[in-house]
Image (cartoon, rainbow, N blue to C red; front, side):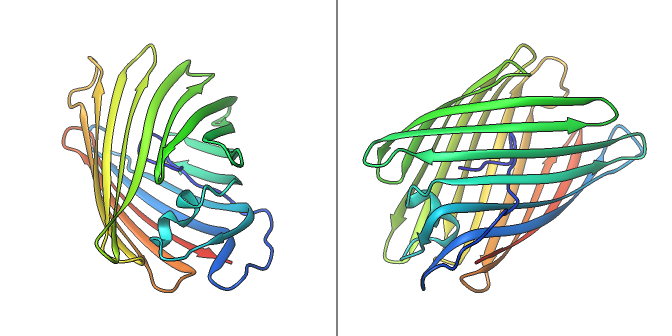
Length: 249
């Protein structure tokens, strides 16, 4: 369950194995992000590599391709590396994690190690525990050590008609500096194409504008290759465009 908005996302494939027809076992990709800040002259650029490896082949079936792993309760490992560049500073980040669905049970557990360096290095840990309460629904609690940040989030994917589906996500994060509420959704026109939008509200007295809005779209040109474009903005702080591509095998 990957959400980049509060947070973000993704993974570098360490290995792959041949997947049977109508399935995949690994995914690898990359992204480029450009941020135009309002209050400083220097723009920001971020780029990274990402991917994941599933312990068993993921059957795509009739699911939206972007949600196949989630709907199949597919346990996997993931990792990623990225660099944020600005004229005043660079920030390098690497992460390694696992999402695991306990067989024949409703229990979900996850863990992640995050390493960052910009001259000084820092290592953080994230853990999550959740329940698959209904088909297509996951609710979980999260805790991030270094930020002393805890949260609650949920994701629900359900069919609409014969070939369409909807993904709804919501979450809450809390630490000593702010509270954040997130709500987003995606409409899957068919199994290959989706459009979506989201909003994050920050309850932070130091912020001049407390909402970040995002619109996005993703298209699978084949069952294996996809491209995603997202645009996020805060009228008083920044505008950000992100282009991502991924390939499954």
